Length: 333
Length: 205
Image 1: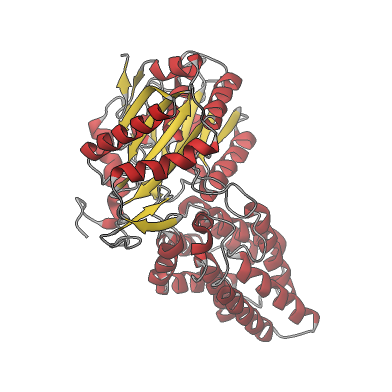
Image 2 (image 1 turned 90 degrees about the vertical axis):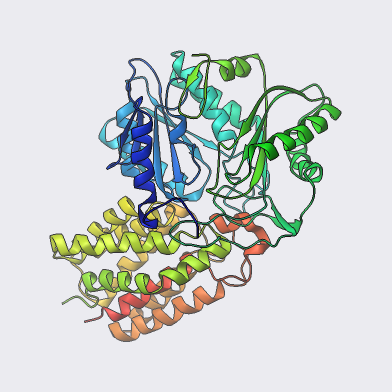
């Protein structure tokens, strides 16, 4: 394993210390493992808390700041954070206007956030609501699975709900916007390689030179199926077809198109994929109103990409455009 | 004298998890994200350290403390699930000291796991090892068996339940994202649950 690390067991702690040093506008508590906006709590503002396993950077710590998250709880790599972290983050951002938990739909995330919310209600009476993100179309949402995974739409939801909270909107409104973003977003991912978890030392699964994995999540796990390696134009079809069919998106729709890198794929390939995707969407009469290209919701060093489409309206577009100042996203300020 | 020395049970489980860490990681790599071994070892190491620090006296205190440590340190789904198991065990065992008390508390722990995770037998989870173990314990206790015999039966039942997960298609947890591809792999959660039962047998005094 070749990584820029020291002790494989100390990666998360060391990276948090690095974030603290790099971003003085954040309050990074390396002991409690929470990342909080330095000016939190902001009086009268709904607090936005998210979290999940480490290994998806910049999700979520890189999205803490003005116009997006107020706090993030990083767990061990690919492991949900624990209730203590979530409680501490909730308390740190609770300004009396309520707190919204953004929870990606994974069994562990949902359970730990639920336990934290139970404890918060018992201990402090903070008003906490949760929105569960489940935009991945690779998995059937049925009685026979753990439900659809929360992937790329998490970023979009955090941005738009974050903007609403920054504008001082009440908790019910912020939650409504979050639910709306989730309902209007669909994602699908693919991988050219797996990833290597530091504590494990080798890739989670092996892909041959001539193979790719379709329908991946963000934890380095295998996807829905393994297929022969294909050119980018075919990959774009494989990812877009199920996304378009699922919402379904329709001619005349105005969308945000998020072309996400899984961490190990260079930006030049992501832009190439965006070219393919925009051609296909144009062919369907779907207009790309806003775009985001880059590695934002990652799985360590996995090579691959995911596509998220969000059907926009004027309100959501304005929330996307609203000022944001975080380590990973900054515009309008 | 408790039939199962709870502190010895926790220590024994930690030792088994440590011994089997690579196996648990490999099983979780095949149908998950490869963190089960690491997470369980971290949690159980912390649980043993807590026992060393505080010396709780009763089965209830030992298991409650273990529960809180696991919830605080493991994360993922395993933290809440194993934590809830020990928490409900603690609440049910009271000052109980014989195999019937243990069996009743074990069942309470299992009910907690099911309430938290909502898994059913056949979903390819830890429940597939815990349910047969609980059933074996209840049956043996009803028949007046000794602690040794009851736990021998529970160990066999848990192992059989664990082995039976291999052909199943996962319906819960991360493995369920793989659909049919999860078939043919032994479930990591059922594997660690079977180790939990094995550790209980070894802790009979």
